[in-house]
Length: 413
Image (cartoon, rainbow, N blue to C red):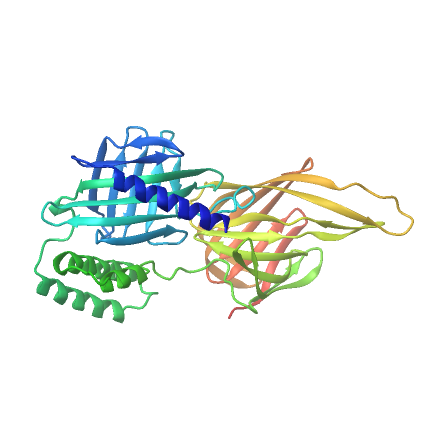
């Protein structure tokens, strides 16, 4: 309810701001984190994938609004949306509405709206308004841009598809649509074919108009990313069996799904000896864990924490971190004294050590393997673990100081 209230107030303010300002020249302005912001340079253009870009620069920050077309309409921003707002500040920190927040620090998701109120084909200019909330790559920093307005931003004729007649545009769209329908999403050419179809639809909008929004609905429904292979496949009843050095044969099975903080996770019956959940967002794989167990005279349990265990697009040598904090509570057995809760702060530092490797495990040769090193530091202890993930299989081996734990069997659904 609070978020809806804030959203409504933001829209009201943005609308009244846009209505009250009159422009005589092209302009792009608004408020960044409550402070006035005005571009000194601005432009509109189509990128190589046919996406419409509105860009502004005030000599400190660069804002790029990336939407599916310049057609009049409203374009929603947010996680995994084809439309995106990006702000690059003076220190080269990149904020995007496609980045997720650090859930330990912020609960609200990225969001926003770009509204095209006019595309003037005669003058080749675009006008509208916008607002967005975006996050840094780490999710630990956020930027708010409100009351955004752009007016008669020039779009060079040669920046986008060539101007054609409406009949020519309709024919080109039909040809592109047929090729799109015949191309499987797993095909290596799928992204190129899909983007060509999107560009044809945009060209038809420009040439013929789209007052009913039919073409825009098709554009908004396109996902031009090819179906990516997965390094930790998630489906109910997927299971992986390992020969472990300390506990013999262990099988980890996905038993269902659960939602935490509005995010859906796949639940394991057990993973590395603790209740765990897995979700993927873009290239990132997050594991949520609740540790519990026993030590002589006590049962213990810990508050949940989440670690970004895998980043499948990282280049060799790239590192990423998850800094977590949790509390361990102890329940004494009869006759044992009470132990106060223990607060733990731990740092998980990952490094991509190798990509596209081949590795033999339990007599099976796996290709397209990622090698990731994890250094865990907490409570004065440092632990190093090596992980090997095979594309479309999952974790095939992990090596600790006790030895290698190897995949012996797996079932994927």
